[in-house]
Image (tube, rainbow, N blue to C red; front, side, top):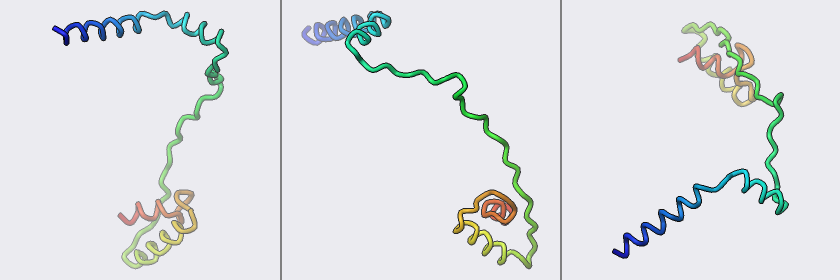
Length: 95
């Protein structure tokens, strides 16, 4: 019986909290000097992603060791994807 009473009280509290008018809450916050969250400007949208085209890298049995070394060097230098001498295109060609 006691559990039912506690559950009814908790349910009543939830229902009261859900029945608030959000507009009156915003007005109360404004009157109390609360900070307002700024909306982003319409032109401040992120640019759509561009498609990256993998540069071609010629792989032959003779140049595999050299390509691995070039990929490691490019990785150390921070050249990841710019052209066919960057690390990612070489590693993709070697897989």
